[in-house]
Image (cartoon, rainbow, N blue to C red; front, side):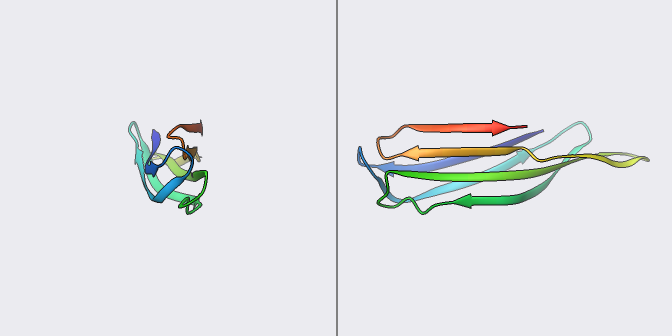
Length: 92
């Protein structure tokens, strides 16, 4: 089970230039199913010193003949800066 997030942004050395594009992907295996995202957030970023994005996914463990027994809600938080650097933090 994995929640991924990819952001592409342009910068001029100090500020974000234009509007970043953001893609989210969930992968699962072994009776885990990606059910989608339950929470997303981002700022526009254009003309600002940084852009941030946040996603919280929903994964559910469903075992044949037993049913769905467990849910997990991993998160990905990222910041992209006008100097080209970035930071991220994930939870499982």
